[in-house]
Image 1 (cartoon, helix red, strand yellow):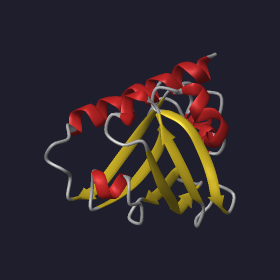
Image 2 (spheres, helix red, strand yellow):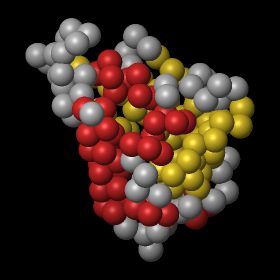
Image 3 (cartoon, one colour):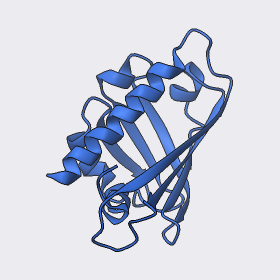
Length: 148
């Protein structure tokens, strides 16, 4: 991404308001139902936009770990009947934001997002590439949003 690691990591903590505005084709709403929405134990209900809605309309995500030093956030979807029930048996997500190797200052530009999706039981009738592409377009939209 062209945005700095600090900017992208900061966006994670205002996702409830920013993501629906920055990437409406992927996420149309995030509602916090437990805690603050950005710390371990927080639960967020995510309503998906048209790119993902073809597969599933919404999901319930529980944040399980946040590591500010390494810019990593982990969550799981194991207790979500719609998302996990329709697409996966279980699913977890790790998002890590790293500055590019030449980019280690707080005002520097450029970072890499590593998005690790661990799952079991992916439904055969769904197109995983379509899911991956939708997520990629979401990060591109977020990058453009942060640039403005």
